Image (cartoon, rainbow, N blue to C red; front, side, top):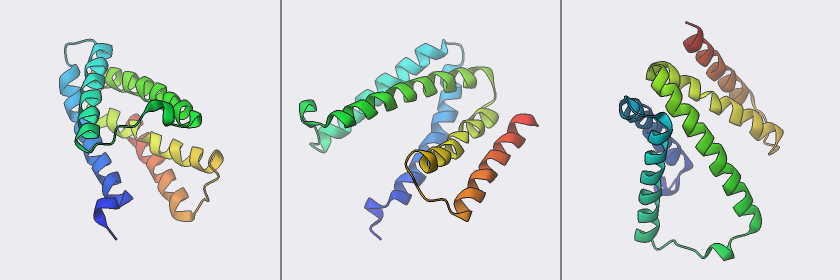
Length: 143
């Protein structure tokens, strides 16, 4: 397996950076408006992503992209923005040790959506793992 192209490597990187996002977000949102914090974070993400695109010469003409890509990326952007606004407000109000794990209920929700909307095939490990994520989130939220 080519590690540089492995989905697993990028998924683990995503988890690691999401953990840092929770920690740094909790520290950064202290004493400021959570919506302003989300805006600042968004500007940083825009700059970092533009830098990566530039360094890798991966810019493409927007007119050349399929309309369905535009539509779903816009919807994804809206969902991401709303998620971040909720996440930063939750971090402002609650402990990172509870907010971050509950936020990861998105994993179980994504599993259900993958099965229902995308027609992905269920498996016992997938279903058991998803239920364990839900159970863990409930334990964290309720106790």
